[in-house]
Image 1 (cartoon, rainbow, N blue to C red):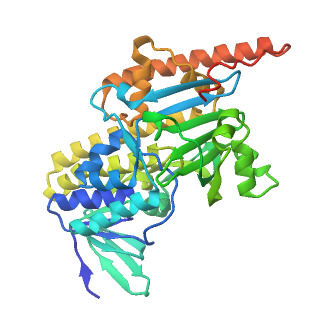
Image 2 (image 1 turned 30 degrees about the vertical axis):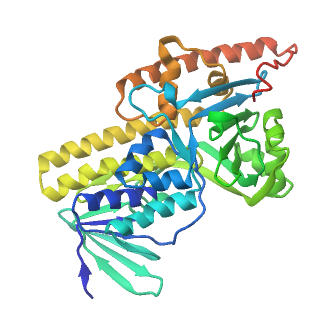
Image 3 (image 1 turned 90 degrees about the vertical axis):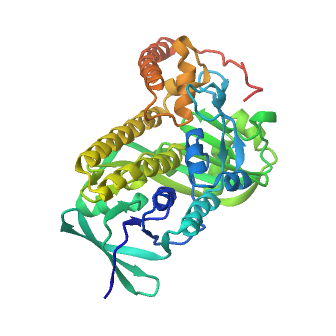
Amino acid sequence: MSVSKPDILVIGGGPAGSTFGNLAVQQGWDVALLEKDEHPRFHIGESLLPMTMPIVERLGLWQDLERIGVRKNGADFTTFRRGAYHHTYPFSRALGDSPDHAFQVRRSEFDEMLYEKCRDVGVDVRDRNTVTKVEELGGGKHRVTSVDANGVESVWEPKFLVDASGRDTFLSGANGWKQRNPQHASAAVFGHFRGVRRRADENEGDISIYWFEHGWVWMIPLRDDVMSVGAVCDPDYIKSRRESLDEFLLKTVNRMVGTRSRMRDAVQDRPAQATGNYSYLSSRMMGPGYLMIGDAFAFIDPVFSSGVHLAMSSAARGIAVAGAWLEGDARKYRKACRDYEQETKRGIDTFAWFIYRFRSPTMSWLFSNPRNPLRLVEGVVSMLAGDVFTNRSVRRRLLVFKAVYAIASVLLRARVISESSGSRPRSTRNMREA
């Protein structure tokens, strides 16, 4: 059997793998990519972040993204806990040179666009080609075995191996490096609807977040009058359902005045689906001759916009690691690995801190009632825009925000205890806006 020996072999054709393959070919390298499935395929995580936009431009896909996407200028947050409060965060308030907008996309279209661009720029793309085995040969060399849809086996010995297998976590799972986080468990139910009322004017494409007692609801505007609507909840809440998923989703979304009014004329366009979330992190990110990117290394949440951004940004930064390895410059390679690991973990930790606390009453109150000492709002907007890797100004403000969160948590708990024997009238401030 003949052995293929490309410079780089990428396992997985999602956003991480497709981004890496495209950028690697731009460096003049011979690249092959193995994808076990086919595009297009449905996926949630439809709201892109502004800091992903420069990567899209590097991939040569800006005009294509404008064609398939809905412009997103910001995000708005509403809570009905202890009253009704609403606030909009425009991306134009971000610190530094973060772009002032992003796009909402159908992931089936977006992921296929990235994947087909790989083929167009010269990546040797193999559809329906499943990796069955990876063997270490020593000295940073690997032998990869794959099988196509017809059962034909292929053998690969790349100079550098990239695991972009997503939640399959091929290398991490096979080697026992995968570490689950039992403290973060959530479940989501979601669907597509037509006729959902959108925000007005320049906020028409913004994502909307609504907190309620069991979690939070999202509304993401897509093309052709379609709205992605879903709820992220405590798993026990979803397990308590007695009706169909379609009925359960509508019942959940209609619990709040703001969402109920926007859904008044809604018609379901896609059946509801449910997914669970159990976050994990690999104890290794890289090694001699290989690198893990995107969900193949770490997974935080299936819904948050952070997923696609972390996938594509880790792919873009990983090019330096592969380049240093292929050059054979040991000193440069060590520095590239150190920088990549530090920045990637910093971004993951920043998003994870917010995501793991996002369902808390404290977080919903802070997001919907922002105060702005030391320009904390700009720091939060920068985080929402995806500026989580190297901007020290953003990092300083987020550290202060964490301190504010800790203090607010104590104060809110004390307030709940003091009011436990009495009742408090609900505020209607900003109810109409919500």
